[in-house]
Image (cartoon, rainbow, N blue to C red; front, side, top):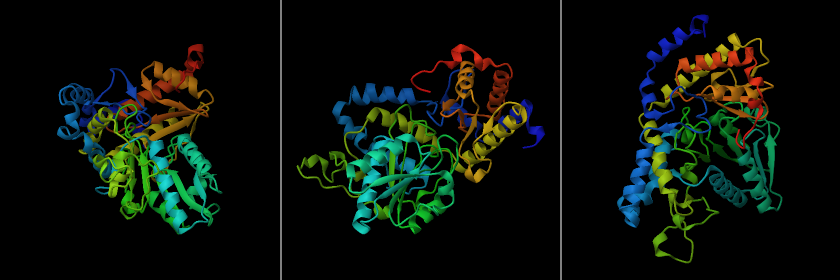
Length: 423
């Protein structure tokens, strides 16, 4: 980043020449708002409200129960799964959209441990990052507690993961569950080399793609991953609480034993048999009746990505974060700020995270101005960069607002110290 890039006029020029510029019109955001929290909840897609109304008023209101067939409701999990799979490099027929990320992790981890118990019964350790999203850790801890019999969760530092597990990959390890992008710092882990290290140690690999799906190029099948989970409400813009997804490699699909064996995963659900028989392939990952309205709205966001070149998305994401980092370094240098997101492109997701002792109050002051990021303990301000609706001028204006808030201690107002239930 040259000094010539560090002015607003240069940013405006880059926005005019942006090949992804037209995608901004696919989203509806409040006027005078810069939205930098798409890594937590994506923006509303154009057509989402209309699609929800269509499902409620027409498909449900008029079609009633007939819409399970006539409107294709029954096929939504697999239909949307194939759309997600194209985004994450999973291949056709390998993904379903269903349930929450946590529930899908429970299903995937349970199945992986059962496979390992059959092949290597002495392997009873689950490794995951100390900085993994807490819900993943909690779910794994709960699973280990339920299994008992020596199963345990061990936490590893990011440096250990990056190094290929030289200290922790023992012959006790059955499963490694990793987040692809660290939710707090934005660190990106190399999926291919890390999966290879896991397999070399005799363990299986599950990847959490919540902070990478829709933000960068992913090649699940090519990386050799065993399973993956993720959500659709962040970069994929599926709406608050929209359903998650689960991907399983082709080699493992019919070995996958469903721990939550509901009727939607049955080979012949409408025979109403009292005995469970799993469906072949992806349908066996389903459990109960699906949330049709939320799935239908999520499809609107997925369809946007069906028209997008992910290489172009990744290129712009890195350009935006390069600019953000350079502006912080050049314009906020006299303040006690640390950039915790890696500078190296190969290790950076689609966000910039900085720390400041008064991080919560600073973010509150930014949000009051219509610049919406979020805060994570300890002292981390997160700025998610969604290339489809953010521009270079947005980054410039954000850092300028930060400079004003810091220079004039605007964050020190009592109102900015008050915390709500959600931060």
